[in-house]
Length: 294
Image 1 (tube, rainbow, N blue to C red):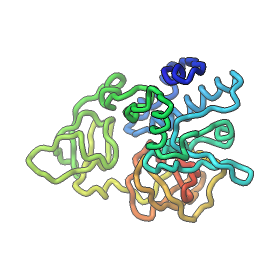
Image 2: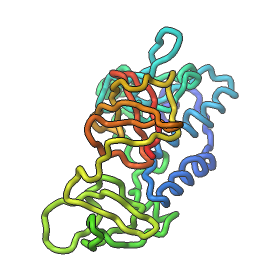
Image 3: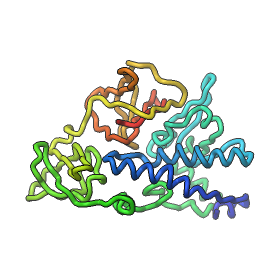
Image 4: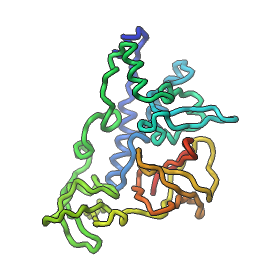
């Protein structure tokens, strides 16, 4: 609102809090209850920013929506490509992999071709009141709230046992729903061992967290992808692609195969891929799409 006032352009407010509660919060909480770690930013982009908001904008006569995502849209032969941002440290295509051709046709990413430092410099030149605003943190639309504090509003988080591969109790955790594969913090181990331990499995029904001193024990060679979505069309099977199982992780090599109706991604080397997170595929800097890790 302050930016619009500084630029002397109209400002309108749209309340999508009910849609956000139903499509993002309730879905996210339901998955955490099952011991799955969802990605709320992917849910929000699909249902709110490029869903309810984009539909409202179209109904109001807008030809396109512009967002502050660090991503690029490029015209290819007969279709659009979703391409990584110039500023690789801020690239957000991972969260946008569910956009299809109709979404890209009506979307603009005006800052994707600039480093963030240049975006800030331009905002300062225009004397915008957000030129020095810190980078956004925390849960989308909720803010800088810890996941524990947020989930405790909806889920009874009860301390439980941290166990090793054989079931021996090693310590205590704050609630099994809070933990994800590969995590090494947030639980207490008995004794004075300085050896780090990593989450290799969780069981929300029994409220236990299984850990190992070997991080590779949390890794998998093959994962099943569900709720698959492609930006343009399904990539070729068998050939290598780059993939990310988490935002900002270094891309790794995978190949796609089909077993019956299921689409599988096989990692070149075993990799930590948490159920509920998205595996997003790239061909160079072009985001192809992806799916949810089963």
